[in-house]
Length: 121
Image (cartoon, rainbow, N blue to C red):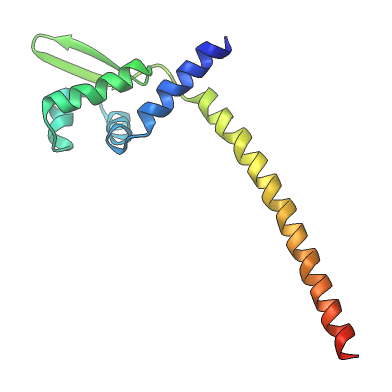
């Protein structure tokens, strides 16, 4: 189960690591589009866009359907809940660490202020 989830995470994050693929997901969030339309919007070749869509498809983020000569893309059924939960757990961890660091800095400031007063007296 962990390996399956890990490989799914790897595929998701690999797909999301590219700005063009994130743009494709954003575009498909508005409306389904053919690979030709996507290639045109992103100023790239059909072959290049097919590769990007393939990565998104492998991650389950996009599905395609071929009707005649046109391959239409739409958002996949996969949502990114597990990935979002994973990110959120690390966000909480770092937030807690930064809160602790803030406390240390504030304590050092208080001590510095007290030391400064004691030197003047």
